[in-house]
Image 1: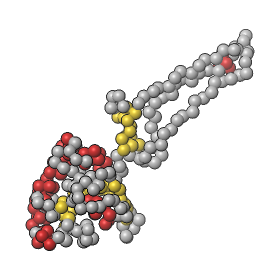
Image 2: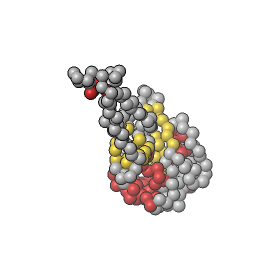
Image 3: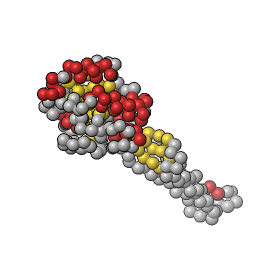
Image 4: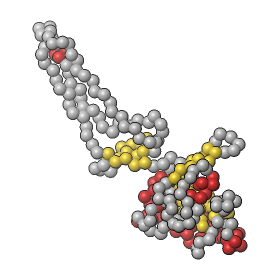
Length: 243
């Protein structure tokens, strides 16, 4: 009989990084996305609150000894997926030089070595314009192999990280036995994984032109890549030589 109104529940928040997708673990249904700092998403509603004895006060019974318990809240298992928020995604075959390009263009320090699958997790780097305060975030994912859409290699597990990118930089190893075939194979894997991803604008970077054998045929390779891509956004470079 102390005029209690019942205690209000306290909301519970779980901090997640921007780019997190929330799904119902049982159905796989999409609950929502958190894209920016400060975004909130309710994933489970709390139960209806109980009533204290003050709610049962009447003119005849001014000090009731009656109260009502609250109802339990919703319970569910969740699946959280992180899609990195980057402006540009670097794609290509293993050992094409994506990580070297990321290190040359940004302050990122990804692992670099002369064997395939040096990159086993996505890497992010920020390129800053020397003329103004603008910046571009680049994402480097593990190289793609033929059959990646079926789980071959490491690339498929990370393709979702470049789905939000505005454009793709397709790094082609000019020293490969078949640079044009590599380019077409990677594009095929992108299309099989997500037709929408394959339609993103691409800039083709023909890498390793510092190698004499590549330098001798760079013009022909660039022309062949432009013909295969059906656009002229082809840039010969040497990421390792900073050319």
